[in-house]
View 1: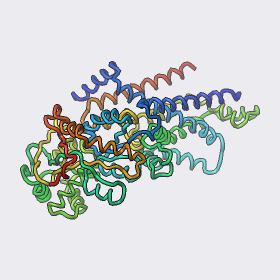
View 2: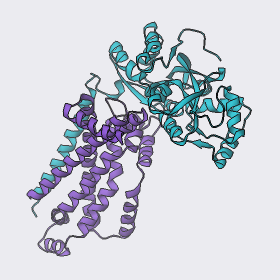
View 3: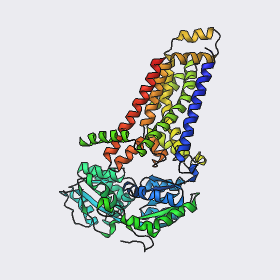
View 4: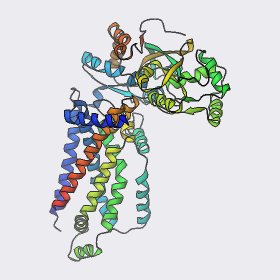
Length: 294
Length: 229
């Protein structure tokens, strides 16, 4: 009934909140940078993250430039959206058409390619649609016409999804929306709406085909009963580039990251990355050369 | 089934060996969720006291609205907080997006309805005589509310435990406004999603076991405090 306990309780709660909040702020910044403003944020496509490449390069960059690097993993579509909103400083993505539009809209000045590899169509070993060894365009046509075999699409506006649309277009299906609608209705086309890893697992569970980048496929291969079905064709080339967001307030440090990724030392690290784990490197270095073309 | 067993074994191994990164992630999870629970409690207990004590037009409607928000999807709260805190949003100037503070705000917002609603029902179930007696003895409104809160303290602490449980187990808000940045905003739930995405199923399961272990310790702690009184 006295007023004392009320004040005691409030004081204790406020103190607790402050202490917890203070711990939350101080120990998170043991890297030496006190404010979130002092951190460089890079948004990356999932494949560069899920293969562990960013986890491998991050500490090296932080050490070399004495900065905290925050790596945010999302599909290329999400990464570009973060860039447009000004929430990240640098993007590492892989969808040329989307990148060019991003630049044309004034959100970045240029795209610098620093790694490449290729996409492949993977599927169950018994290859129900009989598309093994075909060109990617023929394989997609057969999937569309044949009615044998399901296809799981990323369906998330990622770089891989953009590539899938490009292959459909090259195969003669210009109206992608109509294609997916018909495919979903017929039951052979499925949209995962998830990252590459989840999509591969979904394809495994459903005994379906999917389009994947070689990096994520290598990283997951041991858990998947999926095998490469179509892996040659110029349209399957995959180029990763780095873009500095125009809205970033940390242009200098952001440019340091571009310099870092394209430096000869890091290019060697990228080319050698993963050989021990996967038997081959998921990435090829390509900075400073002509843009890899199909 | 071997995956489940391996996950359990790995969880024990990670706990026993005090794996640095796992301890770091678990500690951050606990801190963020504890901070958001305290923040939400600071809002809910006084506000719940007022709503339950006073009678006003639309009180029933207000309680219905609060109860509806029990089921607000975590990703919707995440999206809302993201849009608020993004550089392009109204609070973008604070630079809070993709920091632990943003996760605290988001989780507090997520659990406020459930804690507020349960506080109100806890206070409503207190004997009306207590309110009338305190008032007739000359207590102010604030003193009367405090007396009722003290009567209902067990039910209120249950509301707090439930709020904490929802905060520490949610992934939508933490992923969207925290961004799952390793060593900065990665917490147990986002790490579980992340490891599962990368095919590390055993580690993901192990982190889940650790999360449950934290929940167990917190629940036991609260029960211990209750029994003592």
